[in-house]
Image (cartoon, rainbow, N blue to C red; front, side, top):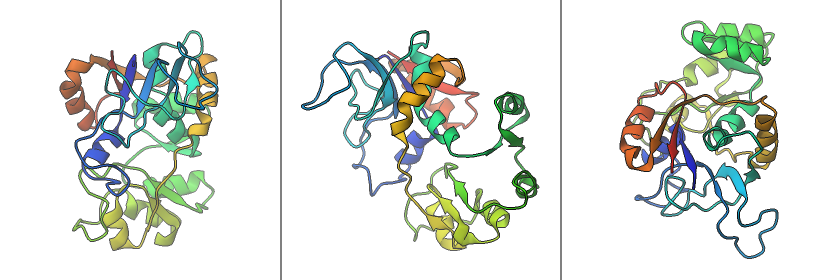
Amino acid sequence: MRACGLTPADWAAVDGLFSDRLPPLPRGLGLEVVGTVDALGEGVTGAEVGDHVLGPATFDGPTAGAAEYALMAVWARIPEGVTAEQAAALPMAAETAWRPVIATAGPTRAATLEEIGAQVTGYGDGMAERVAALAGDRVDRALDTVPTGGRVDRADQPSPAGGSLPTLIELTGDPDRVLTVSDFAAAAELGARITHIDMRYDLMGEFARLAGEGVLVVSVARTYTLGQIQEAAELSQSRRPGGKLMLVL
């Protein structure tokens, strides 16, 4: 391992999200990793010992990315000129950004998003109307990926109907057109759909290529050593990290 990105998905999993798909605690943290190939499993092709690679760490065992060694089932070679920190910031951010056409962002990020061709609108009151206007008053489906901040993946878990789901239902006009990967309790209350998304990790090579060409860049706010993981975790959980937080080994 050389670097590991921390994401809201780490804390959602700790809080119980997807508990039916993950082993019980304790288990490792860190979904996004960069490292040097140390060993290959039987039948593995497309990689050699010594290759520098990026991708997701397996998350269904006792360790994940925040460790001296990590297991990877999907990877891409790191292009020349891309640092370990930049590469480790890519997998989840790039995969999430690949899906939508319209983005929501605060004023500090809006200009950057517009420069690369995204349609951007702000958060807060009136967001549904603004998104509808950008989409030409037609939104076929809406996907909620916002961390729930402690809700777990049980439909019978008491929870107020909050978060982004009411806005998305307003936007589409039908709760059946709204899917969530995180707020299962509110979905059950409001009639929205619950879904598990399989990450498009087949796109890792494309993300790496775009990063090597300077097209795809993820802002790294701060780096920490593995021994500083508690400090990094506290800032990450504040939801105001100012960019990607990175563990560097």
